[in-house]
Image (cartoon, one colour):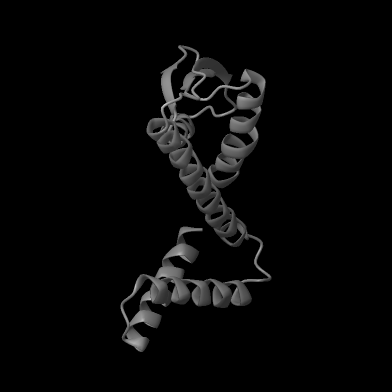
Length: 158
């Protein structure tokens, strides 16, 4: 998998060198062309993890950016208006993540979203405690984290 990623980077930098235009958009276009070419060349290989994982990573990044913008707007609106819409709460969240890296990535993704903060990880590393500014329902909040963040993140990592 690392071999495919490094080859994709090499193809993207080759594209940038050939075009002579050093912009992010040109690099991303070269990365996409390189990804497509590598996929064409390796269609019959058994190890397709790289070609399955890259679209999931891109989808997760876009989803996370959307959620971050949405949460920023919600918090900013609450700060600017005279009436507070906050309903703070602390949730005990049961995790599926087990390794230190998985737990760290999950807690980082939760903490990066405005309005949420990871307070603690339990001793047995099976639950984390999350403070949320806007808690309508604990069950809904847990389901949202489990389905939208943790499941997608673990699909990428594992």
